[in-house]
Amino acid sequence: MASAAQPLIAVLNGPNMNLLGQHEQGFGGAATLDDAEALCAETAEQLGLAIDFRQTNSEGELISWVQEARARAAAILINPSGYAHSSVALMDALLATDLPVVEVHLTNIHRREEFRRHSFVSMAADGVISGFGINAYALALSAIAELLEAGDA
Image 1 (cartoon, rainbow, N blue to C red):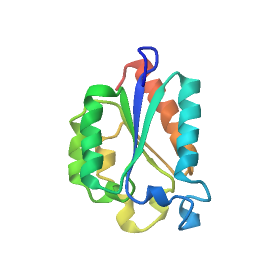
Image 2: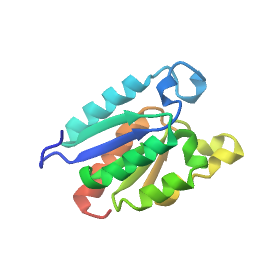
Image 3: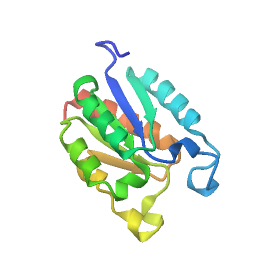
Image 4: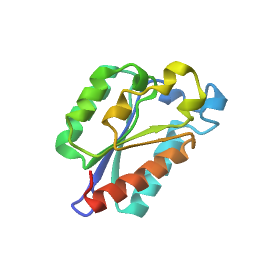
């Protein structure tokens, strides 16, 4: 749990991220979700942040976690996976948080299929980081730390 000196960042992952490193090697490399969590924990510690790292294949559960973050987190880092392109409900939940939100995609979504180039989640995000593999998580945590420090979000 985060202390007053360590703001809690909800790191939320959407569908199929549990298969990271097991399928479509070109879309995430060999890194696993456990690798992403370890990178987030290490990066958060360096930045003076705490994380609550979660993954679900359920849209409803992901939305519930976003709503829950309103009361317990300082910011949300979200890899919505396929829900980025389809979930207006997820966008609405993120907009209702009034928290800083950074959206992450491991691949450059603009180099993939046309339908992946639009993200509803981006409409609720302060920023989007894509195309850097699991390093996108570390970049996003750094961006969140800057947003929290500046009080801009």
